[in-house]
Length: 132
Image (cartoon, rainbow, N blue to C red; front, side):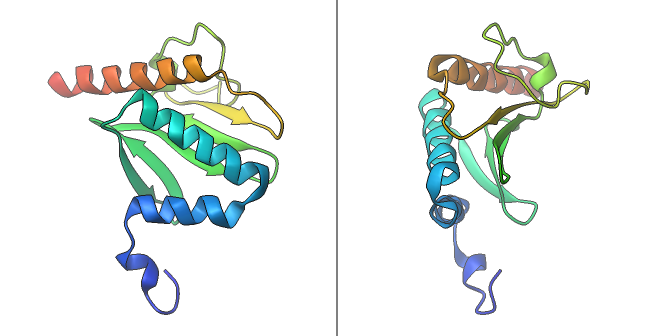
């Protein structure tokens, strides 16, 4: 929240818009592109803003978070260890039993179809677990 309290009145989507604009450069472009692909994969996705500035995408539970660092834009899938990854997108946070992440670096291409398949698989897993 800024001193005027403006951030409190903004929606999560507006806060994510602001983060993308604030980042600028390749990181802003990458986060914006990843966001668009998540929305293409799941038109019903809800955007949230958690942990003091982390974009979160949810549908029947958390799908993934979008963190930005100096050298990478990281998509962390909350239940990534349980998801099929036939294209081998997961390249980070491989040691745990639950989450998996994809680090995107400047100039790297996005395997768009594989990423959208991961998002759809995460949503399907969330919905399956919600029915239990």
